[in-house]
Image (tube, rainbow, N blue to C red):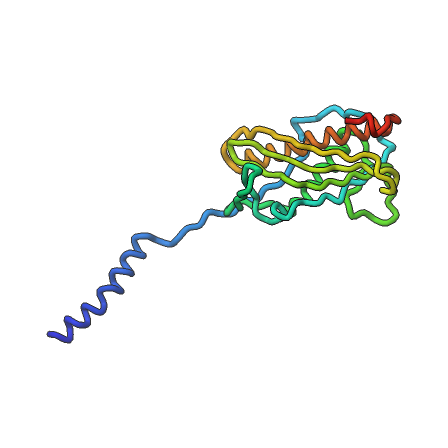
Length: 214
């Protein structure tokens, strides 16, 4: 009788753990969602060009992303000292590549030219203007704002001469309280930057002095 009682005492913790796990069921984790930046052009949105430069060749890149942002996880924050990495939200392609792709698409539409190349391009590729971007901040919070701070530079033929260098400090409100809304707003800030660059290239192509271009 005593032997059986000892066996029961030993078995009880294991039985209780088994019952507890059975009640809780298998652990479930949220699936990771992947996001990409999108250009200003879509089936619903067909923006009018700001210039007709169909014979002008434009090279886009390199686009350099700050190390704090250059990671698979989508980074959120307010632009201060603290950043957060989204646990279940990642970029569908590297952020620098996605940024360059969307900028190139936007400039193609805004300047009405199909002669757009994304860095790195073939050695034989000739460019009339080359655009480089150094992204310092590209961050936001769902339900808050998206901030884009970047230096952008326009070079002349085949990237030989720096024609123009400007600083962009953009803020756009996020119309939603989730990551999807924030990424949509990030795409919109790239559109605003693209329009600034397109207007600058339009002015340069028209012969304006770089010093007079805002």
